[in-house]
Length: 156
Image (cartoon, rainbow, N blue to C red; front, side, top):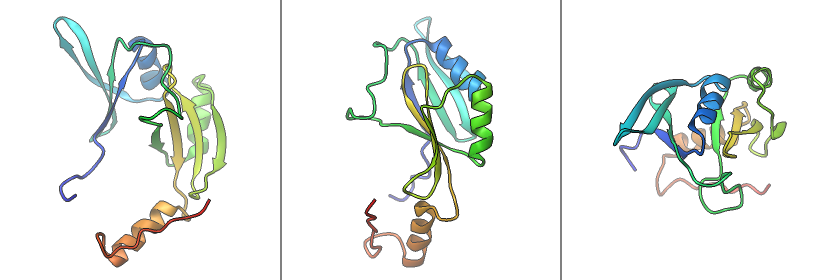
C-alpha cells in the first residue's frame, strides 16, 4: 500500500521491566527515549532502535515466558546488523548467551539467535551480497511492483 514507509515499532508486554531494561539497554545498547505513566503507574518505556524505529516495553506481563516459536502470533524480532561477528562478541562480553550459533541461513544471510528475559526470540541478521531479500528488491524494481511482478517461491 502506498503511504506505509516502515515498521515503526514493536511493542512487548514484559514481566519484569527492570530485567527487560537491563537486557535491551545495558546489553543490547538501545537508548531509553522516554517513559509514559498512566494513572500514576509506569505504562510504556520507549527504546530507540533507530531515529524512526522503536521497541515499546509494557510492564506487568502475566506468565513466565513468551508463547514460543510454534504458537500463533509474533514468532520473533529480527535485528539487522552490519557485522554479526562483532555483535556476537559484544553480546558474549555483556553476558548474553546465543540460543543458536551463527550460521548461513537458507536466505543466504548470516544469522544468530538470542532471547530476552521473557523468552522473546531475537534474530541477528547480516545481509550478504547473495541475500534473497536483495535479489527480490532488484527484481521488483526491474519489473515494477504490483500485479505484473511475479513473486518467486524458493524450495529450501
